[in-house]
Length: 640
Image (cartoon, rainbow, N blue to C red; front, side, top):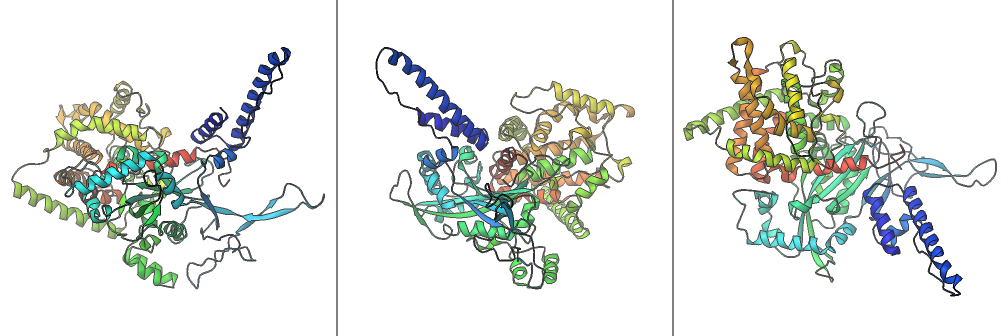
């Protein structure tokens, strides 16, 4: 009974984010209740003359004791680090100056941040001068990969699924024509000899992102806390993203986020931990092989938003950047090649071009799609804070060279489209539209379930909206049209587990819509309520065919990119839709500049051919994990 009670409290603490003090109070309260109940039950026996000694409760009074004795606690490693540059300072290596010695280059000034702070002890050595002890200012919290993989392999159902994946890969002759997951893709079957040579050969995707532990965006104090997450791609999709099957490699301390130079200090710790399993196998005991089974891993792809990809992705030309000693010349090489060094290059089989993947949620839902709604259509375009939002988005505006390159790329893709149409002598524009439309409702429901745990993405670097400087020429829905859309939001029938977009859609007070609401709005609401709006009653009922086609292309792109299965032909069709979409946007909104997300989206069809459907490697589970971390009570002291 006591074991069940303690396990119940541990479950409530872990799943309900219960604080340690509250968990200990709950344990003491339950122990008191059981002791009182036992004492009351013993009274009748003592009154009848029976001398019976009933057992007292043996419930632990501290939740940490339960974790330790039941092996529920993760093997966490707390490494002292600089709170500004994140340079690791293992215990005993902090110098007498107690200041960070890190230099970006041999001739640069040292970081100089204080590495220790003084904590007042509970009892002083004297009544007048209380004693205090030095403690590190910040810790980088990491988890041992070896300990985690040992824990994962003792689960029989995990090992059964790994064996099924290996046998399925061994039997298959090559990539499937219709890919339902990354395990059906050319990227997976390129590694078939390695995956099937015996033991467990595991492939992990890596996700890095930052969140605000205060969960607010603009008002109040804003902090940044980073998390590194790995997902085992050998597991089937339906269990791959479960919380218990995700490896949280590390947590970066607030309040600062690393830049392109200091992120290497974090990645070096990750690579060092994984290197003992990369390129060489280790014997790990498992449920089916108690004596040990060979385990070897590869780490790819890197799935993230644009900001993390720029910080962590790297490129082969970055080796010259690493070898350069002068910070000025490093900056010159960065401007020349657009790349920097990253410790991920030390991982075996790492390809800095093919293994970087911008996530579907950030690129399309919170990038292109929000840009479409807020800038092109003016739904929720902020006016009073336009200057502030423009300053927030300066890092996402394309440079002149980027714009020229983007226009050149679009021109080449248009030529390719014309050549394709000439060769096939048929209009393939609507070839798969009916199938995509049939699957849109199912895709919406599955994505809504995927987002149901909550997406607390507090990264404002992905805001792709701004107040157009030529707003007088911009398209906007009339008041009655926007009112009809809001009415449609209330009347459209959607499942109860799907969150409904706000009824005041278009007003600045509700702010930026989350990816889940964007998904629901575009997939389930707008196609139903917007069809009458492209008729201009003031022009004798004339149909605005260009706006209608633009709306259709937006929906087609959404269906193509959110599909849970794909083929090479459907990827080519997706590319043609994207080309037509960008061409229409340039024609209808010539005063609106393209964003980097528009450029990145043009590469997604090629990625679909290599990696399979985009939901299979989406970053949504990592964002859900960020939301859960952000909701952990810290008493406004997130460093604790």
